[in-house]
Length: 155
Image 1 (tube, rainbow, N blue to C red):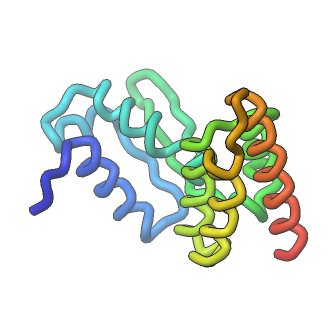
Image 2: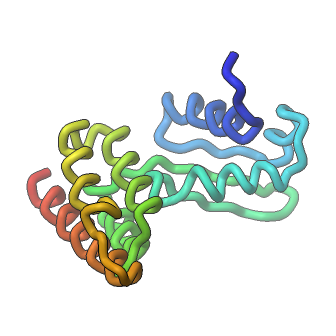
């Protein structure tokens, strides 16, 4: 078996469940018990791996009957998800976050591998080689937002 950390294993477990359904409801304590970790480890996995830039919407309810709902969203065809994605991109986006957005679109079959590589080439740090990093991040956000708008029109 590969040398994977517990966060990778928990992520894979949740994604396997999500492969059958568009949404799941979990109890943080039950998942923590299953993997023998503290509940905050589950929070970490959900916060870092199940977010809008990765194509997921997370809702939670605290308390005795609380749950965490993870919903796989259609980033281009769901109006709310699309608006939230554009808000996430905003006026500036770093290369790592932009890569995550493109990977999510590729994994969801919204764009092909070739299209993903073309977009990545257009928004790469090498392409946007400005001395001012914030200027590069602003231009990256404009390019990515424009591409997403165009993709949405062709869906």
